[in-house]
Length: 119
Image (tube, rainbow, N blue to C red; front, side, top):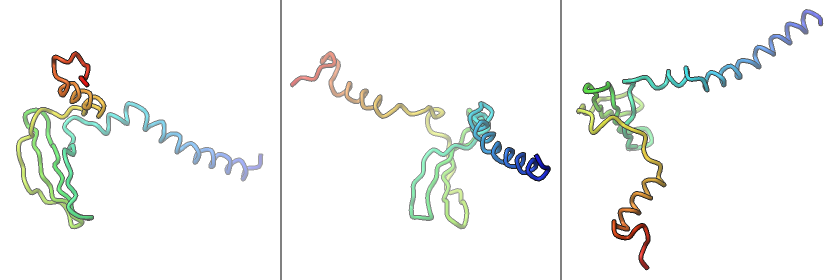
């Protein structure tokens, strides 16, 4: 290969490897650990007020020092509207909708039905 073509080949090979390296990094445990640190702020709720304004409740801290901050978000910036102790236990992943529906259905059927609806 001539020096110009060899340099071009290596340049293109390195440029092609960059997206591959980023894709692999995204799927490693290291990338997941960076995004889910203990005590990192976590959005609890969001209420859009308009296209550019919203109320956001954010949980900060960990353990007994957890706080909820109610923030007003606008294009001009953030404003803390209220601070309160965190409500309830630390958040756990929500049950899938099908599990919640099955639980509600079993409550509606009652304990004496044996799981069979009467018709």
